[in-house]
Image (cartoon, rainbow, N blue to C red; front, side):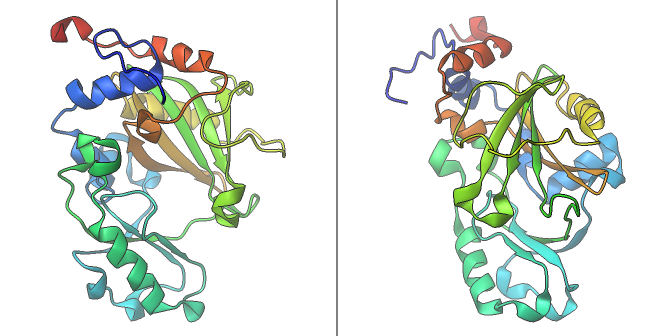
Length: 265
């Protein structure tokens, strides 16, 4: 970030994320960040219909029986985010060797190392296959990511363009009335107006339930053809390493994180 980190008196969002990495971790966070284990937890909290169904789970990519997979599916590693992930829309066109090569790299990744977020340190390295989902209207599966503070969703951002290539990904931030907010973080805003998702209010309610009792967590959801799906828990957005522009929003979000700072001197 190019500035001194103040752990004794953190004020910004990114500073408080670093504090939470050191002092805010709990035994349950690893299970919540495990893409396999979290499915059962979320199903018990809000119901099966919000969880994208699991097709299979393997300890190694080389155990995958591609012949048994449906025509469309998604493969991902349970302990990381992105690396090795493969979205299949037509099994007749896949290159299995290329997929396996990516998964072998992904399953070896220690996702704790880049950000030192301990929730990723104890997750078993596995591969899962999920059913494929796509929103017919947008032609993609957009992310709706809610920043929750003590169980209260305050803002969200919508990630668009992932299916078109990383260089086209955009992030747009909104408040809980779906008013567009004037800042960026990591990616530019979209040049195309984004419609309010039909399940917006439903996602807000689910985010509050799933984040209850946590000083801060980002709750991610998808919406496909009117159905809301749980995405993931993220305790360290960007690892706490990406600036907000303008910087005042780093302080604004920081005000929403209430830390038991007195307990740590």
